[in-house]
Length: 160
Image (cartoon, rainbow, N blue to C red; front, side, top):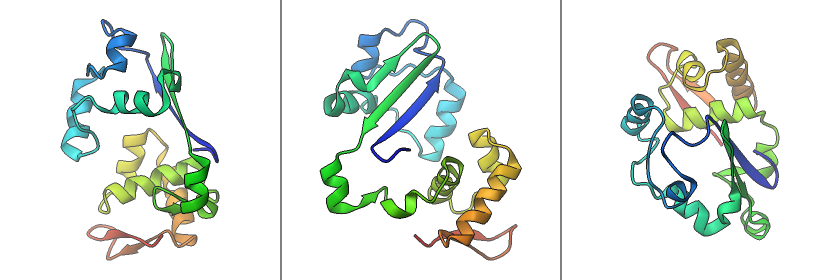
């Protein structure tokens, strides 16, 4: 996450047999079906194939930097919208700048699932457990989140 854009890096390039033009029109060919099904059950993805064409319609094919071993998507923020609303995903711009990328990942995971635990965040995002724990401490210190109830049976409350 940057001041003026969001960049997403996906390792591995296009799946075998999927061509760029197929990708741009939304043909869905997950590299890992098992992982896709988990994300589908968690409600993190749909399987409609409309995401890529939507990005292409708003930002053009140049938003995608496609290589054999990775795909990078760059979505530039509309400065007028940011200036008038001052919000990115419900978080005030000035506040989002206080968060590291790991803290932002942890915060978004907690927003998606307020019952999630540090170990799950660590595993889902391939981030060391101790790093996740430090991010949680920082988010609590900055009053982004608070724990309600016990560590075992409680949940996270979003404050910002």
